[in-house]
Image (cartoon, rainbow, N blue to C red; front, side, top):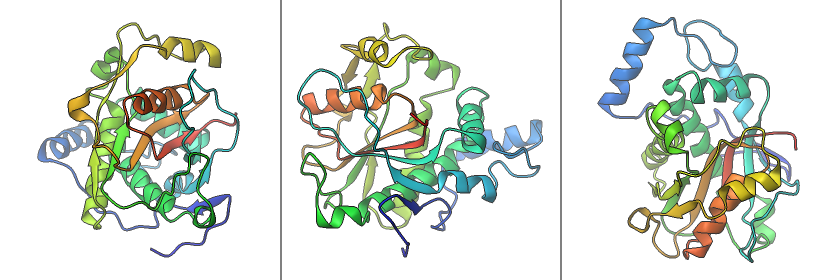
Length: 265
């Protein structure tokens, strides 16, 4: 796939002709929603489409997050963190619609965005000359494993399942159709004592997650496999870095982190 890249951003969303994927159940649910509610773009409310081409561009600028992020205690290497868009405007409205308003149809375009973002990360030109801090070369052989950031159990029940797992499934299916070896490793679990992080300061978010994230060995990526940790929003970074830290403690170093959106800081 041909792209123009700079050290800051790469056009990601919409550059690859991803095809519709998903099982019969997901398609049936989407069809029922379309029958019951007028279909409108989650970003701009344009009628007749769930996520329009114009709003999709809001998740089309792959960039490396360079601001300082809070690190959990320990000596685990910090993986490179990338974002596809900024948590504002159409992108923010779409993420909120997906998480809060039950717009499950957005799992598909979000999955396509993650799929294209991974391709952009693998071919990221600034990495060609020098690896990242942990000595990681992102153009690595083997099957990439997508690890969704964990959701609290109560949130998953409200949303009809783990929302980032749905996105990961769509991304893996799209990448597989284009010859990329990818699997989903839904191995992270947030314990029952985890609070909602909204309104918590960065140190409080770290304390909230400390000791409450666990890894399910039977769902974990195999040793040595490249791992992409994905999430919807990067605010303080506590969730993704705490997740990367607990994975590293279990012998699963995260190759890179990719989020749909990131706040300004």
